[in-house]
Picture 1 (cartoon, rainbow, N blue to C red):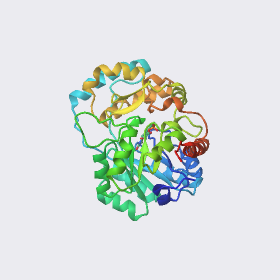
Picture 2: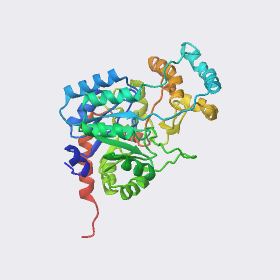
Picture 3: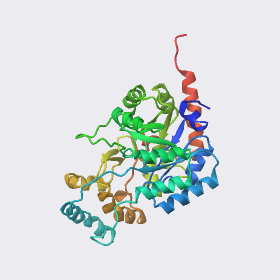
Picture 4: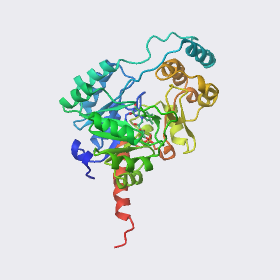
Length: 358
Ligand SMILES: Cc1cc2nc3c(=O)[nH]c(=O)nc-3n(C[C@H](O)[C@H](O)[C@H](O)COP(=O)(O)O)c2cc1C
């Protein structure tokens, strides 16, 4: 057991948050396994319909009595350009030919309704709700808190953390640039700020009075011990759980995660229109030539969906999005409970072995 302000708030045994991972990895089995092992399991619900969110919450509750969370994407305004969509659709058609799927697909809906997703979370009465890509309106934060739900925001800079604290969240994920998946940045800066976890966490801890959860590149007990030393109240680990037994990631994706090295990931926006870190694929390399002409999120995400899905069906990871962080070399195929247990035991051993001049 390791007590921190975050574990005490939630009454959980270990300061380990399994990152919400939208797109399939965070199955009810994974979430429940982490929560039952004393961590905090999280559902990545950003792409789910309200019905799917309700169903997943019920399935998690059937498997655990411990706290768990649900994560949503705060929608951002975006500009739709018919010309840009037409151009990128032409480029994407080349992949559709290779995969044998329909060209020029008609995209009717870019994203699920955020309001309805929030309602599904309110109805599901979950212990924790986290957000990324922005700050939800204060009426949403209030409504969640009124139901006893702990609200967590995601920040990639100190300024974003200060804004989240002012908006009334209960804890903040400090997402460093090592992190796998989409960047949670929401204060649009001309150049994407890519602050690493080691630099970000202590600066955020100094600037806000809420528990800070370190995320990005944390793969084991050494990362947990280091994060606690930096002032974090917990760690959020995504890549570490991607290839575990209970993860719902596609088998070809898991295989890539298990063999990839630390220098084989890149931050790209060619899959979704939003910066995200993943394993370098042929799609990333080819589409890079059009990087100045990619529509913003969620348009590009919707435009590439059929390609990613057909690639998954064909077991072709080169056209799938393989989100993963820089710690990827350390990913294992152990069970989620073993990962939690090993992380805690190793952190305690590391902290006990610290050289002290006494
Ligand atoms: C496959 C994958 C999907 C992700 N999806 C989400 C998501 O839906 N919501 C979210 O807040 N963060 C998401 N993230 C980011 C994680 O919350 C976290 O910041 C990151 O995993 C930490 O870095 P690590 O992967 O090095 O552990 C995702 C990360 C990965 C690897």
